Image (cartoon, rainbow, N blue to C red; front, side, top):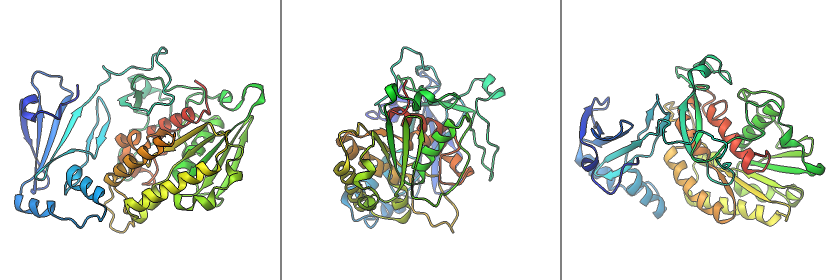
Length: 397
């Protein structure tokens, strides 16, 4: 049951409790319904000083882009928050509804497993649809005999890898490249010896997807653990009838240099990504969009009739940083806006989408327990790799 956004909260939720706030500038309340299911509730956060609120809301120097400024004023508000829930469902969000007057609401409607199809064989494969679902705990037996090793806590965080698993909504995310299979030959051996060549284009997030797939092809069923940074910018590996090309190019504005006609001449599918580096270095949304369109134009210019599948990997979520010495400008509010723009543009050009941002957000804090940037190793990354393998036509269902 989704909370209606057309009615006041008081019309739906009749039990309200003030919660302790660690910041005296804000008050926090939880609202629940006595008559409805216990997995539906709302968290309200509001700034107490209304004079300061008016000052914060009237600022107009956050962006020169009118659409970005509207997004900040109407959808974000002057402050940012993260809500994390664990237990019957793993859920994390940095996207509360902004109600105006420095008030925000997280409307939470958890599935708790009772309204989600659990991978029954009659379900269609996830295929071309944008993958959605919920993160639910493994069965207790899987805690005793986990299908993949659990990574111990580091840096004070407690990763839950191997403790939650992803259940897709209404489709079946299972194919010959699944993480827990040891024989992936069905993904690399083609009928009549036909080839299936895939180009992976982008930054280290793209490299981690390819390396995780190679890790599975080597017979491993755990999480890809390495943090290597190869010196090469281009590479190719071949397994039976399939070749995987990697082209490291983190800026789409440079794809006219990095991607030539010969790079796409024998390619059947392309998986591309672009966002992390420009966001880290602080380019504007307008510049990002301009560079994105330029990069897509280059791919279209060099694509041949052989190119059957185009897959876009959205930017990854990013953990909130408190280290003042880290040179980092990324925020999840920024990534959410860029992804909204990106998905609209790439869909119009016939690209399928692997939504790394949404799939990884519930586990975003675990990134901070690793290298602070990448989703690997984690349960979320395994799902992202599975979705890429399906949409790029690498592995049959």
